Image 1 (cartoon, helix red, strand yellow):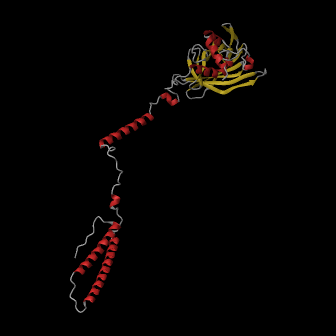
Image 2 (tube, rainbow, N blue to C red):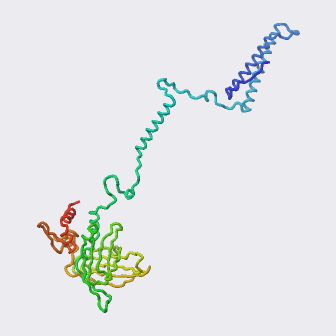
Image 3 (cartoon, helix red, strand yellow):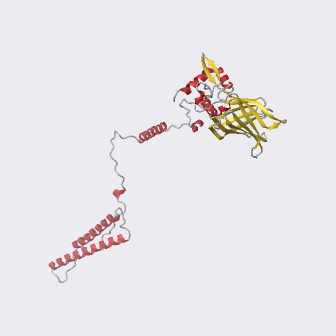
Length: 383
C-alpha cells in the first residue's frame, strides 16, 4: 500500500481541499491497482457474474474512501488545522513597476539624491522660519530694526505732556502773601512767594517753581509731572537747607465753580507725601488746596514711624496783583505763547509782539524765541 503525506506548504482551507483531493486520488489509485491484480479464484460464479461483483466492489470502495476523506477533513477542522493562514500569494511582496535601465540609479546615488533633497528642504525651512534674538525693548512693543528708536522717548512729546499736565495748576502763577496759623516767636510768620514756570534749568522737564523769602516750610520748590510714574513730583527745601522729595496726586479733582463775583474759579486739592528714604525719622506732607482764583491753603502735616500724618500748620495764602482768568474767552489775544495761560506781560521778537504769563515764561522766550514760536504754531495747526 502506498504511503500518504500532505504537502506542508498547503495549509488552511485550501490545504484541506488539497488533502481531500489527495485522499480521493489515493483511494482511486488503490481501487485501480486492485483492479489490475489477478482476481481471486472464483468459487461458484461464472465470469460475467465475477465482473459484476468486481464493479460493485469498486463502487463500495470509492464510497468508503470518500466517506473516509470527509471524516478526515472534519477531524482536521475540529483540531484547528482549518484555521485561515496567509497564502503564499499574500505573503509575497507586491511587484513594483518595472523601471527602465536608464532611470535606475545606484544606491549611493539615490542616497545622495535623498540627502540633497533633504538639505534643500531644511534650507527652505530655515529660510522660512528665521529666528532672531528678542530685544528687551521689543517686549514693550517698540521696534528695533525699522529705524525707529523706541527705547528713548520723544523729547518734544515729553515736553508737551508735562506742560499739559501742569496747565491746571497755572492758577498758582504770580505773587502771593502767606500767613501761618502757628506762631513763630509770638508772631504769625508772613512771607512773600512767587510761582513761575521753569523752562530753562531742565528744558526736557518743564516745571512750576516757588521761591519764598521767609516761609518756614518752603523756601524753594520745583513741581513737575513724572511721565514714568504718571504722578506729580516735587522737590522742596526748608529754611535749614533740608531738601525733601515728594510724590503726589489730586485728592480733589480740578473743578471750575462760579464764585461770589459771578466769575469762574478753579478749585482742587493736590497732596504730596514725602518719599521714604530711610534717612529721616520724620516725614512731611504738603497739600495745596485751591479755594478760588485768588486764595489757596498750604496744609503742612508731619508723622513719625508708621503713624498717620497729623496736621502741623496751615498757611493762608492771598494773591497779590491781578487774578489769572481760567476761560479761554477771557484771554482773547493775551494768551501766553508758552503756557497758554493769561498773558500778563508783552515781549517782542522781529517786530512782532507776544504775550507771556510770568517772569519764567518771559525768560524762556527771550532765551530761545524761535523754538517757542514754532511750538505754538504746531499747536495752532488743526489735527
